[in-house]
Picture 1: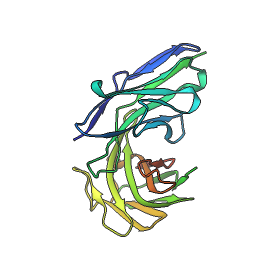
Picture 2: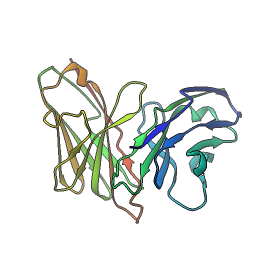
Picture 3: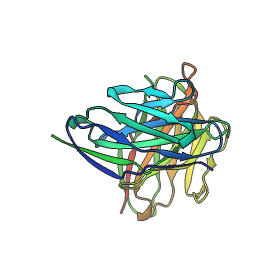
Length: 115
Length: 118
């Protein structure tokens, strides 16, 4: 079975602060990794994804994430957050060799950016 | 980009009635659609996976007779909540994965349907 844990449930930052949200997964095989964002009242949007290759992945809106296989981690980062980044962030994993196509989501991190 | 729509966006129904939620892939063919449920301030929990033309695969603990899923075409899946009860009140989200520029691992999410059972 695969699982995802997000350590930070609620993060409050001031504008221009740097962001790092933790994500660890549990799965013994090859994985696809995703970060999704859900702005208030809106649907889930893909921020970035990792399938293979360069473990440092750049996504939209200045976000990036680094896959560290030895740590089973896929932390999300942004050097300078904006008020508009206030949202819920979900890490998700899919075990590539399971034949299971559905995503397993973490519990989410609510980011609040104060102006 | 790939767009997935859901209808209705909000629905209020009385206890004991049935509600149908539609999920459509607007600009691609979805070979697989997923139905998730999201409780307030919680993550998405997979309910079932449906492949076009075959029976849905339900997650453990999800009643297949209560949550009827039909994936009749490559662009439409429906979730029917039968004999709804107040505890079925939740946010239901579908996602679709399909034949789209070779990226078969990506899922595209609908905007969700908020169901309130009174």
